[in-house]
Amino acid sequence: LKDGSFHEDIGYGVSEGMRSKALSIEKARKEAVTDGLKRALKSFGNALGNCLNDKDYIRLVAGMPKEQPKYSASDVISEEVGTGLSEIRSRNLRKKEAQKSKVQT
Image (cartoon, rainbow, N blue to C red; front, top):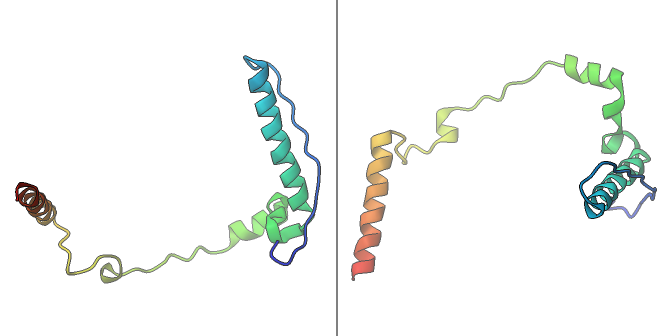
């Protein structure tokens, strides 16, 4: 973490029934890294997502009301830029014509 604290742990990975030995080793290595990372992060507690395994916490969060963000059209789309299909097509055609005239000169 930014404050210099750290935890180490060992992960375990198994792979069976893969086509080749190389694929089995690669999958087992990835699984071991993921397992070790999850184990190390669990030691930090709820700050790094350990609370996601807690059923009571999930029920609490799921029961909270969801706030819908309120956006106005002026916040999302600039009024200077036309939003109609014909306006967009004509703008693109003007750009293409300008590029062609630059190439020809």
